[in-house]
Length: 577
Ligand code: ADP
Ligand code: TZD
Image (cartoon, rainbow, N blue to C red; front, side, top):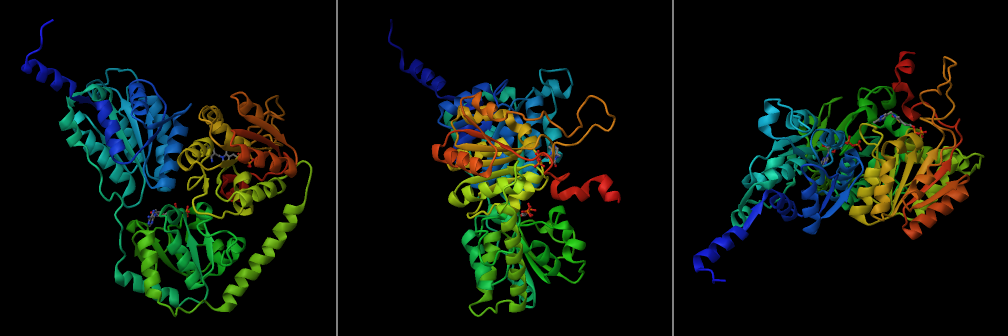
């Protein structure tokens, strides 16, 4: 064997010092503090998942891309870092797309990265494996969409995706990566230099001083003020400032579903149990990170007492949100933290509390409604109804305030939201702006992975079915998730009959007495049947204490549910009447 010449050595070193598309994607994500990928492998991204894991990233592999996408969205909401969902082309991409659109609708930051077929073949429609013009399809369904064709552009592409997901109103971003990109090679030093570490991805947006003064003037003039907190306020992680504003102003507040816990639901100024009263009566409403969409009856009509003189102050990072449904008297455009701090500074130390007549009326109403609710919760019917089952869940959450509650269904959602108090911010994840079913197991996996805290998923039996197969994922990663299925044998309830008298069951009815707990047992987890609140509470406590994946099949009276829960009026037949 002859010794190599210096020139040959340099050539070998140069060859060794190459990088490729796979590694540049991983390095770009890691450089930006992203350490987890939720996805599902296959051509052309299988090696990317392997290499990411080898490179020290957490790769959580799902059974269906929609749930990986939902996990990425929830991770984004919880951490203020875009959650990453990685899928294969066409069908995998489409499976992830629902989650991307849902994330965008909810203002959650996530990035869907999908492998795709070769441009040349797709554009000539020559029939490639899983051919689809994914970029064009994603564009109208997300906040931004980009395609990276060259390895040297990976740094820019990833940086643009991160900045688009996080800055301004957060949302979903699509990043298209044709198969060929991954195997492209380039000089490793040049590759490293091409990556971008995004500086200040979500810049603070300071509200204009005159807008702050206008907001304060409107708030000061109120006789019956109300503060309404939305999930934008929860996302903003300005918990201490929000609490200070609520307490210093002395104004009653109402949290939207995912804003529960920014202040504990047991706080003296919480008006949740007097919701109808405060919405109908308030003369000035300060919205903090909440849109006046269908969930708030568009800011008008019966829910709002038919009033046309009420004035709104709205804090939102998106200027175009203002006047989207009703006039906004005092728009306060900026990030929640900066806006709330500016209001606090402007309020000074001698801010007058709202008239006692108003606050007394609100808290009297609340206390009365809570007493009524306590009576209902104390009943112990057999089989359980939603309220009696939730009296057990309520206690377990009270004992474990750090647990994350995931919640979907119709009646299961509505009753849980109003019965189960939350004590800490960002502990409640649910169906959000669309009222979408199927977020359950994806959100649960993400919550467990990014927080390490116990997760309790309270699921309607129909809702659970959308993502039920992910119990295997939960078992595979040994996640501390306790799924409680409220089993009432169907969608909304289990008692509908086939109008034709035929042999098929009605469209809303499932197999009676289904053994959901066996699904968890099938993968090595714990499965329990609960027939009483005591059994349910005991099984939940055991699950939280052990941290073992658990599914509790909670048997609920099949006659207990209401069609569509509390949004029955949106059904065309009901709306017609
Ligand atoms: P909810 O359903 O709880 O009422 P929405 O999703 O309707 O809440 O509203 C959330 C709002 O919060 C959106 O309009 C969004 O633009 C806004 N938002 C999100 N993050 C921030 C932030 N950091 N600062 C200000 N507004 C924000
Ligand atoms: N598909 C999707 C993706 N989202 C939806 N919201 C629906 C269908 C319609 N839908 C609801 O709005 S709630 C619900 C469906 C199918 C399920 C209700 O039944 P459940 O809950 O068993 O989950 P309850 O507690 O028995 O009402």
